[in-house]
Amino acid sequence: MKPRMNFYQAAPDTMKALMALEEQIQSTGLEKSLIELVKIRASQINGCAFCINMHTEDARKRGETEQRIYLLNAWRESPLYSDRERAALAWTEAVTLIAETHAPDDVYEDVRAQFSDAETVNLTTLIGAINAWNRLAIAFRAVHPVKVKASVA
Image 1 (cartoon, rainbow, N blue to C red):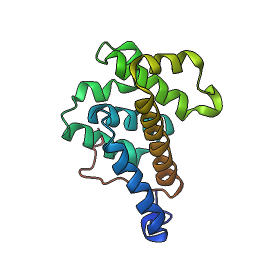
Image 2 (image 1 turned 60 degrees about the vertical axis):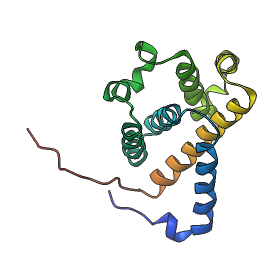
Image 3 (image 1 turned 180 degrees about the vertical axis):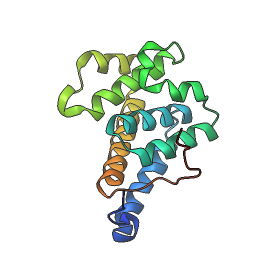
Image 4 (image 1 turned 90 degrees about the horizontal axis):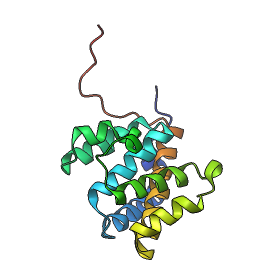
């Protein structure tokens, strides 16, 4: 895959604004581990290899376990996630797939049982932001760093 353009160079002021949103999200008080799980899950849904790579690395740096990262796309079947994380992951899926789901009431009620008003807005903004990043990375064919080549068996 060949990158189409460097969107940071093409529109630096726009990218600064998106980075400022990222900084705001990080300062909201949402758990850092939750933020990374949401970013990974949305990126999995969208098929964004660049963002999956980045946020799994970030999650590991913040102490996330390999097992929880590996099982994230099957979070409903795993006991490794808290009720708060489950509500956030369900909301992440509903908002990421908004054209299909229209953010169902039952998923919203689960989020509201776990998150305050401000946290719900911050979580939803986080989901919107990672979806924006995914769309930029996919549309402009951002390529994640390759540290080692996979061996062919």
